Image (cartoon, rainbow, N blue to C red; front, side, top):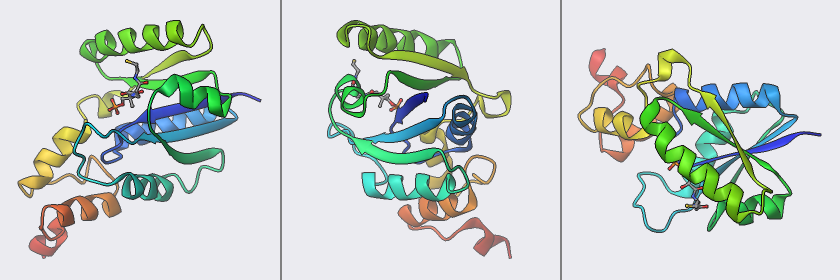
Length: 168
Ligand code: PNS
């Protein structure tokens, strides 16, 4: 059986992440999408909220499990007995950062954890959780970036009503 972990902040999950999740779930028998509990960042959504959103957004994918982790990815992967991490690449700038992390993880896991890169579909190449949050914070339209239920939750965080409220 083949298994992989897709780690990330997912603050919040976007269509770009969901594209990677769907494609990785077709390649591997089991995919664990895991939210990093990063104490050094101040996220918009709690880990629990991010896990819930991912569960809802992937409920039609039977071989996808949502989890969270703290600390090093190599330790978490070892605990789960998983040897492949998935990361999405949007542009060359992602690659430089991701290559260094992938090489570090491989080196420090003693070759136990490899990273497999999937290139983000072109229609989502511009997307990031940070830009989605910035657009939403100014009440911009994020309907092309995240599922409707996620958009609602983001606007709520900024004390805004869903855009459909204003458009009526
Ligand atoms: O969605 P992100 O924020 O780009 O995800 C980054 C993530 C979670 C993959 C990365 O920061 C990570 O794996 N962090 C856990 C700590 C760790 O293992 N760091 C790698 C050694 S530098």
